[in-house]
Image (cartoon, rainbow, N blue to C red; front, side, top):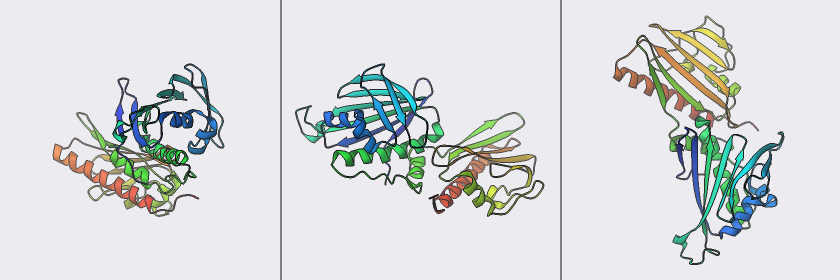
Amino acid sequence: MQPRADTLTRDEHGRSVLNLRRRLPHPARRVWAALTEAALTARWMPAEVDLSPRAASPVRFRLPGTAPDGGEVLRAVPPWSLGYTWGEHELHWSLRPDRAAGAADADTAPCVLGLRHVFDDHRGAASYAAGWHTCLTALAQVLDGEEPDHAGDADGALHEAYIGLLGLAGSTVDEGPESLTIRLERQLVRPADEVWSLLTRGTPLRRGERAPDGFGTVGTPAGEITELCAPRLLEYAWSPLGRTRWELLPGTDHGARLLLSHSCPPLPEPAVAAAQAAWHQRVEELAAQLLDTPAPG
């Protein structure tokens, strides 16, 4: 699968907004049915969805192996607009005639489907985008009378493509009078134990030993381990007066969330940019290596 030209922004409240749009060769009423009728949504959505398209009515979601979740319909204007909450998330669906297709009758014209997904976990956006890409592909197949393909993003390649498309690979710099910290947060596509095994090459570690090379960069070789909790945390000291900290925390369903921080005394601006580039390259190398690691069965 290849990512589409989907976008990621923030709303006036600072929440993340993922926008997706797909052209469908089907009239809006047929697509509306696929958005609202449980028998149809079950064919392309990962969860069972039970809703009545009326504002303020409850919505029920059930994912396999999990407890039911709830939401509420925010807006329903058949067959053009549907919005509802899913836990802390908001999903806003819109339909409009695809005038570019040449049909004059709005009731029979092919349509453009839009999805506006509002959420808080900005760094998890690539996971949501890859998931919706898979769902909307399955929706199109259902509407075309085909059997939907639920294989999804099994190896994580689509997720990694969305990391680049949505601008999620950058770092931040916190500067103070006596220190500087470069921070990177990256959703990974494998669980923490697999990431840890790759970083350590399967070697058991102990505090006071030198950290494996996988935890450093060319310009910042790994130093003595000062804090260790495998497979979640490693911090090491390096000269002069710096420290680097790797944390692997729970993330989205794709895998662990990497939090990486590199602290040191203040540096000239070119040196800061060079350090950011080096850590960015190291994380990209790790992400590429994870794609070459077989996904869990």
